[in-house]
Structures are given as structure tokens and as C-alpha cells.
Picture 1: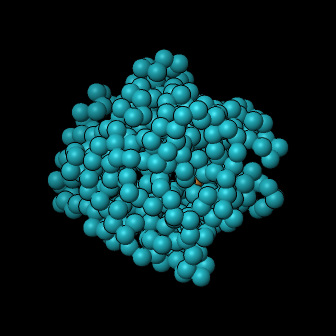
Picture 2: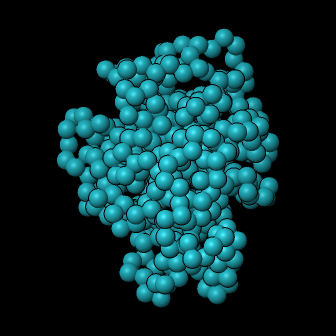
Length: 413
Ligand SMILES: [Cu+2]
């Protein structure tokens, strides 16, 4: 979607002018909420305000510097806008799922000698995530790695499958109100991301933790079986499982997860988890409370021992199923990318509240290993992020700290 810069300026300015009641507030954070409301309706309002602030700030920044970008050349005329699923037309929704099906029908780039189970281009992403799981979660790279991963996936949909839109996102706050299965994103229609799995009776609870971490017991959901409707009802999951949490507390694995293990896509939609860990209040709190990146990313993933799984875990586990409950294989459910776009959007909003600090060296905290075990060097702006056979090139952390000042150029509405 290429516009002349004047048209794009007009379009975006129009959108933002509608969203922001008092233009003089655009450049200041003083009118923004400072603490999350425990009332979810009020918290939703706060989130809308914060998102509008972020949009306004990026708009102003790009407007000022559109003729002399330092890096990347991101301007209002080539800015991609990622939208919430519910705001897309049926045609736009289908264009997205068609592109995902296209990626699943294309041959993998990963050599089968390295990963026999990687059958499709879609699997290249799953395999990369499996291979790197222990160095991209609870690490300094967590947010940036998943930002780049999702962005390259979006690029593949566009460049390899003719998709002309951008990566949509799942607003957890919306489904926490409507219920997952009733939302346009998961209602199982031809214009959804497919819906729940077939109901399985008498499922036990989900038990997280182990490895020395305290247990968290969560209820299972209303599905549990194979997805039966929508675009992904015939989808085959090829890779994994590696660490699949099953109702009742067992964990299932198939060695490294890299062998071919064809099976259906399962989901187990669990509204309780969505409402408890990823409602509007949880999101607003995650944006407003943490003053440094360590607190921000730990709140998001859940401080071990706190009993909280954060909005990141809240999203993954409210989806449930296989590979949804598998930390290693979770990108094998195409819904993963809508979840991680929302993770990225939350980080993006938080970053705009103090751009200089939060997109620079002080915006990184952590090391190269899961909870620093085994101990490893600190992640820095020069740490490389490499997506293996999914997509290149490998880039430095510094290229991933901003969505508009570097190789990427997008915002969220
Ligand atoms: Cu991940």
C-alpha cells in the first residue's frame, strides 16, 4: 500500500485528530493515567488513551523528521499500520488467513537433514523457535526477538504469499469481556482464525511450574480436541511436542521436537485465564507500573514464584491445546502471531512513554539464557538476533528497539 506522502499524512492526521480530543496534549504525558484502574471498563479507557498517545507521538516524530531519517527511511508515507482483528473487514481477514495457508503450502527452506519435521515455510518459523527457546524467553532478547520474528513472518506473508495487508493483533482486553469463542477472532467462522477445539470431557487442570519453580494450577478450557471449523480446521501440525502441558499435569514430548509428527491443531479456549491474567486492568498495569525494562518484561512473563503468569502466559494459556501450551512449539498455532503482535504493541506503547531510555541501551535487561541459567553475558545493543532458516538477515538488538527508527516501519492502531 503506497500512498504519496500528502495523502498518507492526511489520512493519518485525520485518524489521529479524531482520536485525540485536545491537540495540545499530544506531546505531553501529563494528561495520561499514572496507575491502572481496577475497573476493567475504566482500564479500557486508559488503554485507549495510552494507545492514542503512542500514535500521536510517532506521528509527530515522523512528521518532523520525514525528510531526514537517520536510519531505515521510515516516513508517514511508508508506515505500516497493524490493526486489531475485529476492525478488519471479512475480506481483509480472509486475505490474512489465505496468506498463512499459502505459507503452509510452500516448501520449507530448512534442510530436512537438520529438521526432518519441517515440511513447510510456515514450519521454518516453528523450527527456529524450537531451536532457540531457551535463549529467547526470560532473556534480554525476549521482546526484541519476538518483535523481529513476527515482523519477518509478516514480510513472508507479503513477499512470498502476495498478502497486501499487515500483521493483525489480538486485543486480550476485548476477548476478556466477550469471551474467546464469541469474539470475531475465534468464533470459528470462515473469517476467524478458526475457533475452539472439539470438547473433551473431564479434562484435569493445567499445572505449570516444576524445575524448582512453584506450581501454578489453572483450569483447563471448554475444548481440548482438534479444531473443527474455520480456515485452519484441516491444518497439520508437523513439529513437536517438546514440553506440552497436558490437562491433569502430565507433559508430553517427542524428543527434540524436530522429527515429523503430523497431527491436528488442538485448542482449549479458557476464558478464566484470559480474564484473570490478560484483562484491561492487567494490560494497563503492565504498561503503567514498571519503570524499567526488567520489571516490564518480568511482569509480562510472570515473576517466577508470584503465581502470576503475566499477559504473555495469560494469552498463551487461554488459547491452550497443542501446540498452544508448548513453550517451544507454540508458533505452530497460527494464532501465535496475533498474540505476539499484541505483546509487541504493549511494549511499543510502554516504550513511547519514555522513548529515549526505553529504545536505547537502558531499554534492555537480561542475559542470553533462560533466567540466566546457565549464566551468560548480558544482552546489549550489539547482541545479534538470528532467525535461522525462517528469515534473514541476522540483525543487532539496536535495530529492533524501535518499530519506526531502524529497518522496520510500523505502528499499531
Ligand atoms: Cu516465544
